[in-house]
Structures are given as structure tokens and as C-alpha cells.
Image (cartoon, rainbow, N blue to C red; front, side, top):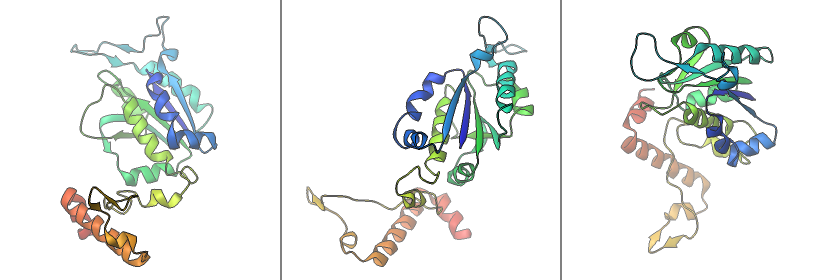
Length: 229
């Protein structure tokens, strides 16, 4: 998979992509992540990539020209399955969408900043808008890190035990059941006996029941949705 990220602050993304599963996926050649500094595509010598909004008002707006120039250069090298703008009012990112995007070959993300991007970027240059939640961040870089991490870990080979990703929360519309490890007893707090029984079928049944109950308590909207389906 090839991932390109257009940003005003590439340094913000160095650490998230150089650690843990994402870094191992890069080392295995499963994904290549390229960071593109939009200041490098500025139309002026001051490398300016933002300006005041027409009509007045507080804040700055990212200019369309650096974004368009960067995309034009990248499109000479490859076609994209999706050109994604990370925005608070985009479609809400979830596990289903992560699964969908993990099957793509070439993805491009545009990180907004300040008051956002010139609206013409959204109207003419992208194919999709994604939000990671109903709140506002300083910029789209952290959102890009979240989305890319969620996608990359689903690529076959990124995780040593691929069944681990398939049993994550939300893969089946439920949250995960409780998990335990050694010691079996600590400060008088014991691991449920069923998990020590070695009976695989009963353990699986217990875990499913726990997932249902936990989803009902903590995410009732998911529980109700599953029951309706």
C-alpha cells in the first residue's frame, strides 16, 4: 500500500509512523508512507501556504494552490483509490471504513489546519471527507495518524498473529470481552475459572456473552443496531 499525506507540519507525523506495528509494516515493505510539506509548493518565496479569509473573520485559511500543485505532481506518479480530506464534518470513521480502506492500493490524505482549507479543495480535488469524532483538533495530522494506524494494522502480515485484528472491538459490531493474563490471582482478585478450564468452546461462548453484555452496557446504540439486524 502507498499512502501520501499532505501537511503543513510533517514533523508531527514522524513519531507515530516510526514506532510499533506501523513501523514494522514499513520495514516489511507492506506500506510506504510519504509526507509532503505543503510549504514546498507555495506560490511565493516566503513559502506561505495560508491566507486571510475572503469576507473577513478570525483565523487563516489554507490556500488551494499549494494543495493543487502537490496533488498534480503526485498524480503524475500514481493514481489514487481515494483522495481524503480529514475534517470535523466528514463521515465518521469506524471499523467498517477502516476495513474498506485497508483493501486499497493508493491513498492520499490532506491535513487541514487553521480554519480549514479553501472550499474549492473540497469541491474539486478530493473524493472523500473523514472525521474521527465530533470535536476539533488543531490540525488534521493527529487524525491522519489515527486513520493510518487503524488501516495499516489490518494489512495482512502487519500483525504477526492476523487473527488478533479480526477479534478486535467493533469487527463484529461488538466491543471486546474482558481479557486477563498471569498471575491467575493477584491481591485476591481472581481470573474467571472458565478461562483456566482449557475448554475452547465454552471459553468462546463466555467471551461472546461478555461482549454482548459489555456492548449493551457501554455502547447501547451498537447493541440495538445488532439486534435490529
